[in-house]
Structure formats: C-alpha cells, structure tokens
Length: 267
Image (cartoon, rainbow, N blue to C red; front, side):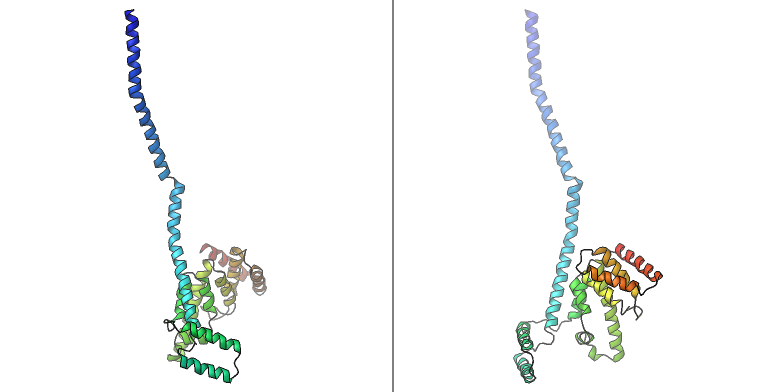
C-alpha cells in the first residue's frame, strides 16, 4: 500500500514537470524556426535581384524622358524659325503671299504657326544642338531629324553667315562627323531610324575619308537584319544588303560581316 502511494506521487511529479518545461522548449524551437524563415525571405536571391533590377531601370527611364523632352523642345523651336514675330511682320508676309497667289493651305498653315509661336520665348535657342543632345541621350527621332536638316538650315541655325568660307566648311565637316557619331550611338541602342540613316549615309559619305564606304553600309545592313527581324522595313534592308554585296568583293563582304559582329558585341 505504501509503495503504491509512493509510485503514484512520483508519477504525478513527473507529469507536472513535463507540463512546466516541455511547452517552453517547444515554443523556443518554433520561435527559432520562425526567425530562420524571416531571414530566408529577406535574403532570397530572387527578391534581391528584383530590387537591384528596379533600381537600375530608374536612371534609364529618367534619361528617356529627358531625351523626349529635349527633342520636343527642339522641334518647337525649329517650327518657329521662319515665322513672323509680331503682327506687323505677319501682315507684311500675308500681303506678299496674297500678291503672288500663294496656295490657301500654306497661308492657313502659317496663320496657325504664327499663333502657336507668339508665346514661344525660346525660339532663338540653338535647336540643332538640342537635337544633338537628345540623340546623345538615345532619341531615335532626334538622330533621324539631324539627317533631314538641309545644309542651308544648318548654316542658318548655327550662324555660319558670320564666318569665312573656310570656317564654314570646317564647321560643316565637324557637324557631319558629330551627326554620324551620335547616330551610331543611337543605332547601337536599338534605334531603327538611326540604323537606316547610317545604311543610306555610308553609301554616299564616310566622314572619316570623305568618300563612300560600302563596308560600313553593308555592316549596318547585316546588323539591322540580325537585330530587327520584326521590322516593317526588313525586306527593304535585305534588298539593300543584296544590292551592296553584288558590287563588293568577297574580302569586303567578309570585312562587313566581321564588323557587324563587332557592332552586336558593342550593344
């Protein structure tokens, strides 16, 4: 009887001890597992990569916005370059236009431009330089527009009239070289219009030599076909490539293909 009572008391003590100490150990273990889970989530490589990737995209988005803004400002100034500056000048232009029976659409277009340009306080700024700046930032439209400027327009915009003949020639060469340079930068960033201008441009002039450069033209043709398969003008560039290859030696074609490969690695 006495031994039975002692056994019962011993069992009760063990039960109480288990209830007091085991839950605490279990909770500690669960807390440790929870902490490990939090650390794993914070250090997860996918999450880290997402954060880095988002950070890298922000400067590119800002740059694209700045390039677009520069291009639009340049175009606004360009559209106002030959527009009368006040009512007196506009009325004089209108009288002269009517006296020579100017086309009605041209007169209406000038009226619209005149009203739009009246409040343009930046119309005397150098829009050619702004186009260059926008192209340097990656604007395909700006690079394309640089190629559409007539020499007389460049002379007027850059005030070449105050320079000697030799100085004008030197400045024009410098402008042409810079135009090619920024256009190549845009083309390597994926600019379709820029690549097309280089394909066309090098067939007539290489600013480094002053002559034609079919190797460069063919290289950009290959580069375009390798990187712009979804382009609407793909077939036209393909025709240009075939046209150029028919007029080049095998060695020149090989050089162009090698150069096209280098262009892809420079992206």
